[in-house]
Amino acid sequence: MNALYSYYDDYEDEADESQTETRFVLCYCEGKCPFEDDKGLCRISSPGGKCFAAISYEIEETGEEIVTKTYGCIDDEQMAQLQCKGALVPHLNKKNIQCCDDGDFCNRNPYQFEPTITSENKLPIIIITSCCVLTILTFLLFLFALYLKFRKRNLVDVINKIEECNSKKSQSHGGSSGESGSNYLTMVQRTISKQIDMEKVIGKGRYGEVRLGKWRGEKVAVKIFHSTQEKSWMRETEVYKTVLMRHENILGFVAADIKGSGSWTQLLLVTDYHSNGSLFDYLQKNTVGLDRLLFMSLGIAKGVNHLHTEIFGVPGKACIAHRDLTSKNILVKQDMECCIADFGLAVKFDSTTNKFDVPLTDRIGTKRYMAPEILSKMANLNDIDAYKMADIYALGLVLWEMSRRCNFMGEKSLPYEIPFNDLVSSDPSYEEMQHIVCTMKIRPEIPEIWQKNEKMKMMTKIIQEMWHDNPTVRLTALRVKKTMHKLITKTEESLNISNCSEIE
Figure 1 (cartoon, one colour):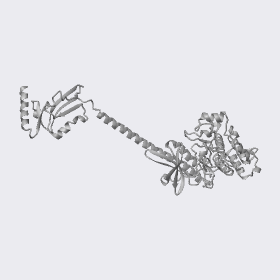
Figure 2: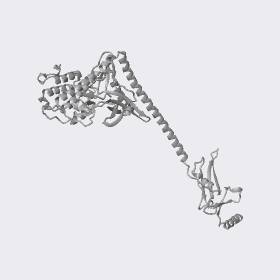
Figure 3: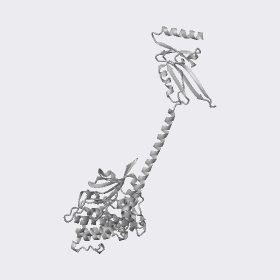
Figure 4: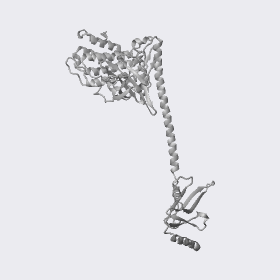
């Protein structure tokens, strides 16, 4: 041992002699001694070189853990910077290395430096886990993109089948439907979404929103459905494309389209645009005279009658019930005539095939306008007449809304009010409406002032027969249409108000 320290002293003397040029540091070495030096030391130049101590664990095939400690010198500056940071790099086996150059044998002093094993390096686990998660997410996104692409293709196929079916019907009968207007172009190229310039939002609802658009220089309304309302969009498109569906009191259909790329899809329904908006909006801002009230009511009755009427022949038209007739689903044209819109819940019945077509949707109608037999679940939902009579009930409530805003004989109109406004909440439940309509048998109040005018008195009688508790007692759409026409053309003296059925 004395010989070893004497050897250290010789190295220190040499270091002192050359101190003016560079500083040399002696390092303890074991296992990594240069030139297989067995004296247990080596020398580095500082700054630049480093003394190091390293420790590693290795697992043998037998499972035994072997600890290896090494000490030595790294005299090359670049190599020192690399190796001294080696512990930061993940290794198969646990490993640590520490370096120093602040004094002789700094890598051996147990009080200043002792190599220790760092805790198990979790970096490889984090990297592997992150890669797995990213791979799974990428795969899921790929599957989702395929699903959207498949669904879009499926929806287009549905439209194609509807269009092809109607086209064959028209062609097979020599275009006889052209006289009634059903040969009107109802389905343009489905690139229409790229041809329309979208403008402001003009309406919103549970289905999505309606935007004003311009197409070929004309204003159109573009109804944009949420992707969750796919079934309603498909149903409304199918109903609009029904043979002989076009009518002046049914909202004009232009086209249906699907717009989307990758992660989103828009379902578009393009229709005629009417600046007056819905009847609900119009009545809140405007009053109507008696003649205009009858004219608007006649238009709605004609629209409902066209839906309810089954046309026999070649081609024919199925009977259609709306199922969600409200003042919000009726639009006011520029000439003040009304047209019916929103056929997402409509049902169809073809007596020649005895086919009853109910939409596959979770949507329900507006509870405020539901007929008592629907609220009480007593209606025969396999009978198209049950749906037609429910439409008549709802139409009676709409006519009551309109009549409140009528100013006749100098009488001031009443404030706008929705049916049962003061009896139920703004979004009533089934239970609320069932209690008011079925149990209490309450209907909206008829103002006494309406009895001062013969036409308004007749209007009152029509409304009351339309919302009768017994569906079989209610007027049909055809009877309402004829009665309204008589009210417009007949003078008050010729009106027989004893019974609506007497007006032919």
